[in-house]
Amino acid sequence: MSISNRPVWMGRPSLLTKAAKGFAVAVIVAMMVFPMWVVVATSLADTEDVVANGGYVVWPQRWSFTTYERLFSTGMVPRALAVSLGVTLVGTALSLFVTIGLAYALSRPQVFGGRPVLLMVLFTFLFPSGMIPLYLIVKGTGLINTFGALFLPGLLSAFNLIVMRGFFQSVPADLIEAARIDGAGELRVLLRIVLPLSKAVIAVIGLFYAVGYWNNFFNAILYLDDPAKYPVATLLRYFLNAGVSVNAAESEASAVVAPQSVQMAVVVLATIPILVVYPFVQRFFVKGVLTGAVKA
Amino acid sequence: MAVAVKDPPRRARVAPARVKQPARRMSRLRRDAILVALMVPALVWLLVFPYGALFGNVIAFKDYVPFLGVWQSPWVGFGHFERLLGDPRFWDAAANTVSISVLQIVFYFPAALGLALLLHSLAGATVRRWVQSVVYLPHFITWVIVVALFQQMLSGTGVLNGWLTGAGLEPVHIIGNPDAYKPLVIFQYIWKECGWGTIIFLAALYQVDDQLYEAAAMDGAGWWRRLWHVTLPAIRPVMVLLLVLKLGEILSVGFEQFYLQREAVGPEAGEVLDTFVFFTGFSGGDLGYAAAAGLFKGVVGAVLIYTANRVAHRLGEQGIYQS
Image (tube, rainbow over all chains, first blue to last red; front, side, top):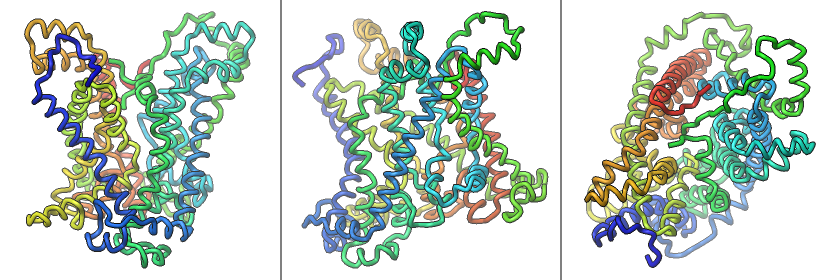
């Protein structure tokens, strides 16, 4: 620690304190990282390795990409990945569109109908939709067994809306007034002033929506009859649920590679997109989470 | 997560509210036409899904027959609710839900606070950022994968038992053991959410005035006394608020985690209210009865959340609803 910003009054921590802290941090990080490592290692291990070890591998004797090659040759997993990607992209875009529109309108003072609409949104916080009535609505709107059922029922989150509205409200009113006086319409103010100033909150809320869609396995179980339409999280659930004997469609693959490797490879494939986006959005987390959140 | 809705102070209206005539309303609508148009997509969605579902709750008072549909099915009044009150499976689920919630509060809060204090005390900014990246990550991993990870680590053929038997010790029965179920789900919850939970505590910790620490240190207070007399009092409002709001959500422990693991331990130990609704409705085929259970939970939950918010306001904090 060459550059230390420790104030003088704190004193130098004893070696023991330092060691204890370092140990605690190491244990916590290991508890998070080690299970993920085992997953990656198992997915990349040879069949013999996995079988000899009883189902998992901490460090493969021989690295092999056979599992992944097999998975991509069967068609089921690539299709599920494509479904997940499509639902995530379309769902996130629509969610952001709807959320930004409502949040901006509700952030303007004295907007027509603003109060009742805000109360309507807040009420959904207090009383979330029940699973059964929502199912009947999805059925009534003819969405059963369509991809729309995977994102339309949860298009808008009241939490995200309120965070975004809070952020929009923090845009200096003078700035907006000045633009209005210069003749800019509301739409222009939104697109040219408010949105460019709100990149952080849009990034975070976009991430929240995207992760929500990518990770959702249950909507497909509830609303889809046809397993061929399943997104990857739902497919994974079935692989894991079936235990060692993997789904029939995978049997040709599992004849050559260990079923555990198949499961773990799907876990890896389902996690990679999140890992890819994560570093880019991470620096906005605190801003996004705390905007409109508890103020100490 | 707690949210404060802050409305700008209502400005004095140009005209007194009393003379709100249709003509004025029309002119306001014309003035705000673009803003209203921006609201319309969300409004349509709200009316179809959450509010459609809200009215769909009438099914809780009906004997739902699929081919008759919601409207044609015969009314049963409060019949489902009476049955619910005498159903031991429902009370098992309710008891599991509440006890898991309480355990979550008891173990998750100190864990998140402790981790936040540890992160706060790390002097090197680079190390802290890296550790934060790692501990926030599990929040973004789906429960399907979290459950799979835990199975890989703790099941009969998992890593832990591999090590134990390798060292000549007895293997431990964790996954699929009803007695170990509650500790397991609490531990999973802490593993997944504890890091994310530190964000709010860290924000509060960074707002503590450094001069307070300095003064305390001058007076000879060591690390523990600074923690007890400066840090904890300073972040007490956040802790109280989070606690109150969490108590308001005591009937919601999350659905997915329990749906995924209920089968392994059986309904007696593993059922919570949300899974009760699902399994009675879709596996049992009794949609009306399941909807009644869901509605019961929803109404009690709404009362609890509302009360919790009132209490938060009473304590001088911002809750979710603030007019």
